[in-house]
Image (tube, rainbow, N blue to C red):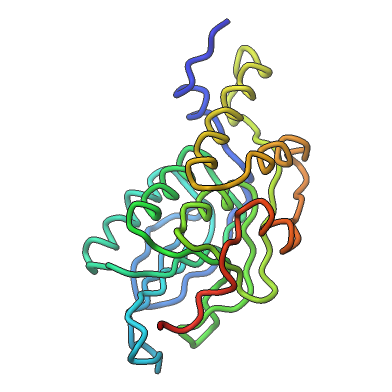
Length: 222
């Protein structure tokens, strides 16, 4: 039986565990399992005047609608340059790819980290499941010290007639997206070999070899 790729992908969810916490300042959306958005303006909290980038913190579950909410924030604040920090257990694959494409179109950098309490600066975070797919959209991609990327195989959130065909559609769509982002196809192979109820954390060397990490760190503005 032929499976419609769009319907198959719409059924896909990765890691339904929700992250927690939203630093004050900026934009939030009511609910529990959703991606929390915090936008920190240049110059805030004694950041160097020479650094004109926004720090965008994305925390929690990548829900359907997350990309649209983020774009509204970015457009309202006229964010032309940004480092986007992820701290997420995962979420919907389709939404993660949409989010990554928006970040690439805007030329933003990505990193893994969470906003430290009382500070504009990040500390170590984790980016699991569907999160690395969104993270891959960064033009440059780094890790805060101690941060981790982790992956596993996709799981469908609704029944499908043919699980094997479903997985083939998902794998093909994700692989095409990652190749467009400059990521090795080997990441898809690695993902496919990890059960959905487990997480395979990548070493920094692996993340660099796969092309997920391509920069040492966001660092100060030049």
